Image (cartoon, rainbow, N blue to C red):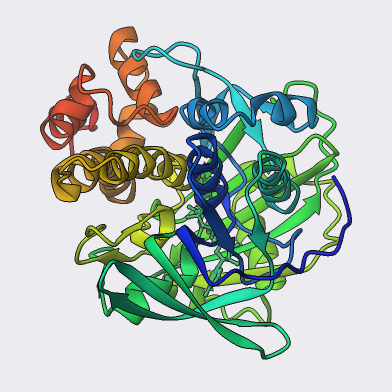
Length: 420
Ligand code: FAD
């Protein structure tokens, strides 16, 4: 990866503006460029920059390949990932993503996002996508044949840019939802995450670095931790709980909170007994969000700019990349003069998979999903169906957990829940 100046002169007019160069923006812009579309990415920050969301799902490898990024990703030396492990007290279970119901890749990577996002953005640039770093989109105005966007660079210079279409890939920046008042409240309670990178010090040969480890708090089953090992002896560690529950701990800082929560959880404290807490911790609150609609004939919201559910199943980057791939296909048909219905062709199909994840997230916090996965004698075919969703294949309607997620989850939970 290069360390080159990232400033760029913004033209007065392009066909498509992509707001943000994160995973959804990099994939969308590369796919458009590959189709010969005149595209420009406006990115608020300079790269590399920190981002949360470090455990990928195998489904997203299809979009990385579609955008032509796969060889570079494979060569980058990120931590290989083939599944997810779960722990609660003495109980442990794991899912191997290669043993799944849906076809498609069964492995992926655990990535430090600063390096991963920079790699994707540079791959897009290598394919001819211009990225104007340190340029924030500040306004949106519809015009007779498209949109006029206002922007501002980090030196305070502002400008305007005409385009035919906007793809908002601004993540938690949520540029168009804010400018166009599209935001609606999420129906999840306000949760908080405290997280840090650590030198994990794990020497236990039985510890599987190829899997994310999700640990449930011993007494409060709606509190959980992620441990995402990287290839360099570091891990990403985070705890998620409702705001009130974390406030009760009265910790002085995110790092102290994280250490205190780990200390309350003996199985995780044991895994991390040699860890060095060498890096700053951070926290984020109230990240779940939703919008009135995801697209019109002038713009589409990708990834987190549209909706974000919850981190527990690591679905964010996969949803972001899938939204990019799907939106570009609809947009290319619109540019081709075809009549397209963004609701039917983009929003509804995308939301179907999001809905599958929503059912899994609800079941997680209700404890039902935990009853299911820690059930001592699960049927192999049911585990493969669940493994598919955990691997990101939440849109495969052949899978009964996609076709009827709530009903399937309820039935299985009734079978696996211990009698009161
Ligand atoms: P982003 O990656 O957020 O990129 C958006 C880009 O837009 C940024 O570079 C930003 O600088 C830029 N931008 C913002 N505003 C503007 C503006 N005004 N003008 C121009 N540019 C702008 N997902 C996973 O897949 N796996 C995980 O393990 C995981 N863990 C998570 C843990 C937590 C606690 C949280 C909150 C989320 C987690 N996620 C995870 C979700 C993941 O972080 C996001 O889903 C993912 O980064 C979304 O990608 P994106 O392309 O939509 O947006």
